[in-house]
Length: 342
Length: 224
Image 1 (tube, each protein chain N blue to C red):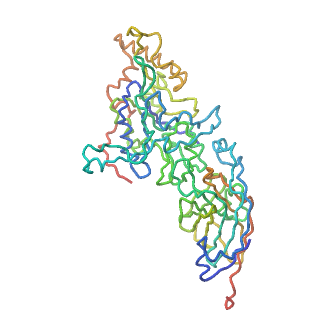
Image 2 (cartoon, rainbow over the protein chains, first blue to last red):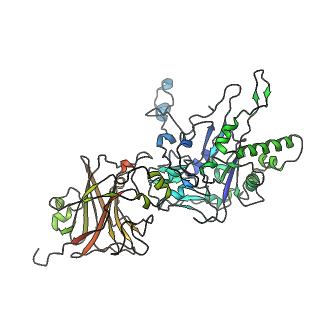
Image 3 (cartoon, rainbow over the protein chains, first blue to last red):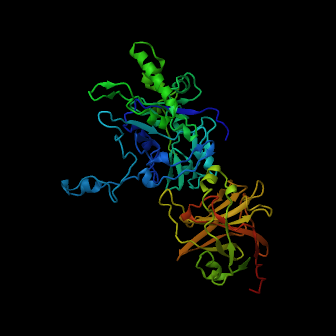
């Protein structure tokens, strides 16, 4: 695999995510409405701490350890959470009045893609949680691409987007085992693997990804890693406050996260207790590695500066006063383009 | 092995694994081995199969017939479960293929090499009726070249698969595929994937070496 000339990347500010799933639905409406894609959520948002989507994906292996491929497990349809069918017909047209209520038809599900929403961890008044949106990481060292025996996965030279060629894919799913983020889905109708395409048909027209553009919280920045004028480079390389999820998986993701700063803890008298963080350090380090502390320190320092009335480039960037400046120039309005479905 | 000539109604039943043509066709039992771990094309596959055995099917009974136009192979093997549906992400279909060298010197163990292709006729249980013609020129290079020239049908009964794969002796194709003729010698090999064991791609049982196949000459005119 040749190193791509440029690399598209995304930064998600976890301090701003409100878990509204607008990104999830934007993606679903655009890309995964066909038969065989019912259960696919190329974009998902889960509550942390939590078991995630697919269920317990962090314990499924894959990726690399000390540079060597680490065997991975395949998530089942139940782990992903199957698409449920509801008894709409019966409720709305069955003439049964209030004797029926909306419910899932058939077997009662015990898991879904957002099953443990808002559960989190900790005890009142110091309970905590935050939301973690995830897409394919379009890794620099993609385990999926390297696992495929059919060379059906490519990393595009012009922008580093990782794509599955459905004409070459034969549905062997070695990629699903190898991806440590478990962000590849099997299409049961077409018998091929599918995943987030980083909205490449939009990006090619200068339009940011649907998940980013639709985000009401201004969580997502998009752009090229090497564009020093744009927010991605500033957040990742200059300020170093955006870091990858599970860097120990060894795939070098190109999606980065600004780690969450929770409100202070309360002591038994109900007073703010600043002596230790509400979200345990170990937990954040287990997700983002040790660099999370440096990122949090920088964030706190700059927040303090801004509070004191000083200028902070970092805070201005993260506040994102003008939302279409978050996209590294990919700010074209999709409504100005005539899209053709192929 | 010999591919005997059949004609008339018997030839017409050649595509059916239970067809009359196969009733008295001579079959040979071929021993199979798993493909070597070291030859799996990616490190991830080698890592995840290093502690698992490859090649669940240890023998396949093979027979072949031709009718002057089509060559058909019938493969039969033990498979305790009929894995036709993928159903869940973790389930894989059973499959079988017959490989033929497109050129005499094509190495089987590496699925050909650049410039010397192996041609495979491939049937998969979830794709019933849509067998593929595949060409490979080395490990990890197999590609489907057409889906309409090879016919494949599988019948699973009482713990055994019977699968017929057939193709015209000669086909018009720009791809390096085997071209055959009555009265000539050819070579073949077979491979079987046991879906219930997660076998797919290069993870399969195969017949180790090329075997000779003699296509019976057409009967001389007036003598048939």
